[in-house]
Image (cartoon, rainbow, N blue to C red; front, side, top):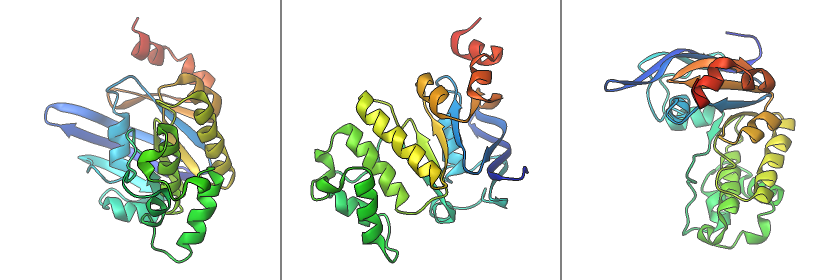
Length: 234
């Protein structure tokens, strides 16, 4: 494992029947970085998030967080270690208020103070007594991210954070990601919008058929022949 790595995958594999969704996948996410995870539909990106967060169990290989093997841990144990995650479809509670959504995410001491600070950071504090269902889709995505932050994670896995929202809200979420990153959070982001990936990530990892086909600086990955073939064909 590399020095400075917060997350390391070593030859991780996951099969669904006869389909190999993740194929001997090895990658490293360095502490304090914003890393993009790209690949065409069906490349195995979301499955990889499911494995890292413990929702799915890998068939072989190892997943390390700060050098500790978390491959056999359950989702709540992984979350307590310091890995947070959002989903393509928000996991908020629509019939609960914004405030209740935040408080239910953590029962630790100081939860109310932390919830207030996070809602203020996301410009959601004036809406704290509104039902989550009343928020716009972009605001719901903000709430989803702030709920994850209630657990004070070191590594945040974001599954298409900018998808389906207007440019103003996209910029708000991206600004929040950079602000949280400056505070020491590490991000691994799945995103199909290449402008976002290339403009906001320090490192990009490209998947196809469940294996890493390229990694490096955004400009390097963008020009990689195997990546271009995976997206556009020959």
